[in-house]
Length: 150
Image (cartoon, rainbow, N blue to C red; front, side, top):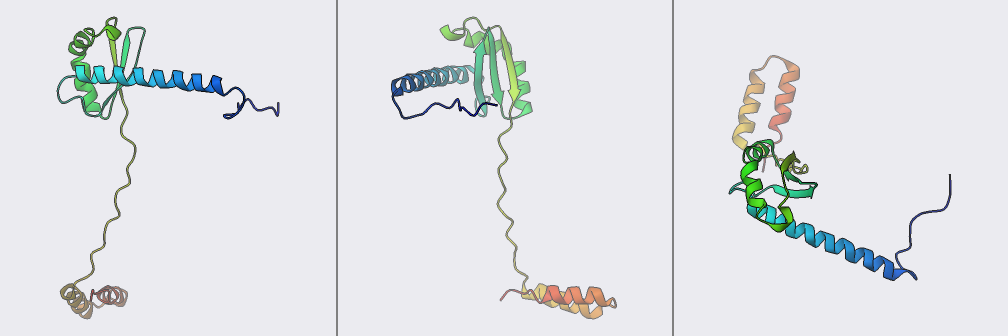
């Protein structure tokens, strides 16, 4: 195994080469963003939100959406979408639409806030503990009753 790293230095003599690569990437990103804007504008009303343009190669337009029901509706209306999108010069040779489902990333839910025990509920728990014959259950109810809010 070679110890030589293929990583190229970011700062150095061949900085011009990197800037041209960066410029190429920026140009591709801008082209992709413009293509996505045009594709989203061609989608039927109500299907734009959550739908993204992925690629268009060899006449195949690939879209990504956030849920399966929206993907089904897009597939159902794919001929209408292709007809509209072909009006644009970039997409005049589109003959197939492929829809992918890509759900949004997991978002953690906010932690549930524990509501403190009211004095009335604490009194009821303590009263119920007094009527219970099981000692273990009585101890648990009394301990719960002691968690009253002030």
